[in-house]
Amino acid sequence: MHIRFTKMQGAGNDFVVLDATRQPLTLQREQLQRLGDRRFGVGADQILVVEPSTKPEVDFRYRIYNGATGEEVEHCGNGARCFVRYVREQGLTDKDVIRVETVNRLLELRQAPDGRVTVNMGEPAFAPADLPFDPKALSPRAKHGVDVWSLPLPDGREVEIALVSMGNPHAVMRVDDVLRAPVAEIGPIVESHAQFPRRVNVGFMQVVARDQIALRVYERDAGETLACGTGACAAVVAGIRLGWLDAAVEVQTRGGQLRIEWAGPGQPVMMTGPAQTVYQGEIEL
Ligand SMILES: N[C@@H](CCC[C@H](N)C(=O)O)C(=O)O
Image (tube, rainbow, N blue to C red; front, side, top):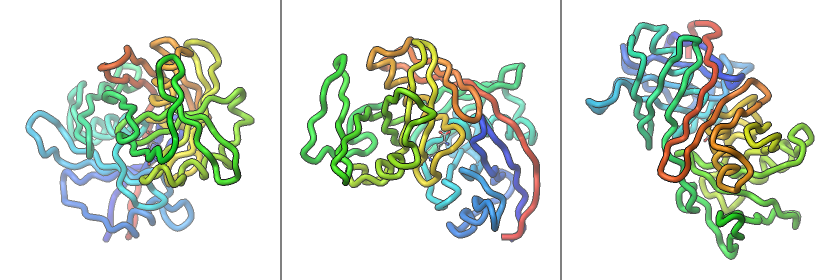
């Protein structure tokens, strides 16, 4: 099969974007993995597929696959911003506000005149079942009235995590110095911990000021990426609930800066950041 693709990036989190609005596109897991493969394919953290909407009140359907495994996932924040740029650049819409359905959310996306994109990422959720997280024999400890969990690691150590679902699952931990954080060591252990039956994205957050954090994320199926949009939302929401952060926070990632705003329970998280087309190409799968 011969397909056209667009390579995009948002804060260094990179994507292969495919248009399934003009022709149906059903790719097998191996084909998605090939697209995501940096040596034998194009290379991307995630594959994004733009489909026609299935509901009258939304403009498109947005499907996300982790590039390394071809596994479909629920949400991708940096991808959502690239999605907006893509549908406008490809002439699929000229709307300034675009409504998109994902597997489990409705997103509202806006492109600003400076090219940055703001996404209404939906409301966060915190119950173990929302991720899912299986508490087994653990009980949470309350900090500022918020549950934090001491997760036992196989070697006897424990890490303290806050649980946040942004539609996809996140475990967030606070570190003193993000540059020295054990992302490559602890990230994969927590990602595949038996208490996360669908595995989890793992965030390492350094609080720099009440309106600024530095963040690294070990993404489920992708390893450490240069930025993770849902990870940035999850970290800021966790930091606000725990009393460390104000309602609007600049998030410094290795690939760029994101702005995250959350007004508190019952409110959606708003994310603003860059999105860019890198190149277009064709590949035989
Ligand atoms: N890069 C993303 C998140 C992509 C999905 C994630 N790896 C998962 O498995 O949930 C983002 O920008 O949010």
